[in-house]
Image (cartoon, rainbow, N blue to C red; front, side, top):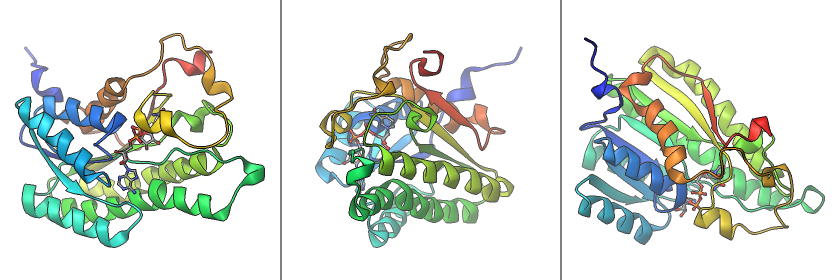
Length: 256
Ligand SMILES: NC(=O)c1ccc[n+]([C@@H]2O[C@H](COP(=O)([O-])OP(=O)(O)OC[C@H]3O[C@@H](n4cnc5c(N)ncnc54)[C@H](O)[C@@H]3O)[C@@H](O)[C@H]2O)c1
């Protein structure tokens, strides 16, 4: 009889999660730690990352924390070096951290475009380059999971021009890296979360969040654990032949 128990286990595998101090990233960290991974939380909020890692360790899981500023290449290179030195080459990288502030197109500024794209698109590019280099040199394959947004499928509100463009760049990054890394057995997949009431989403600055994303959802509003379940699938042994795929976890927005 075929056993399915190990399909979603991450025992002894190191997983690096950006932005794991809060919201969706914290949910991903908890789910992947519960699946057996050693979770490394890298965040600009150093205290928050430490607190989150300590909470996981107190719950009996394996976790660590590292400082990371995704807007700074030097910080990215150093954090990726540290994760390899302290924990070993990651099995998986989850590019989760992102900014979500809003700015209307007609009031748009190059500064806000650059700030958003620097963290949401350029940061994941540099993270992917650094961790993929380590994965390729280790030769054991790996998983890269990018957290984009259901805004790319129309679950949008006003003020999301820089944000949605940055997530479009992340989706393009996913596709192109999936192609280049397939020969190394490194898969690259994307999750598109719908609205999740996280600290970052609630505190996002900008004009009122008016638009289709406010529709009532047949399956209800998502929680971080819903997004984390999709990430677990892509990170798991079960998904070894799944790459360049996009999974929306959006409470059923597309049927509204
Ligand atoms: N919450 C939603 O409704 C929603 C919907 C779709 C997509 N997303 C995406 O999910 C991801 C997580 O969002 P969230 O709602 O949990 O947000 P959040 O603000 O609650 O958490 C984001 C984390 O990223 C960290 N971070 C921010 N800038 C950073 C930087 N320069 N370097 C390193 N870390 C940095 C923050 O400190 C924080 O811990 C984001 O990419 C977001 O765009 C969220």
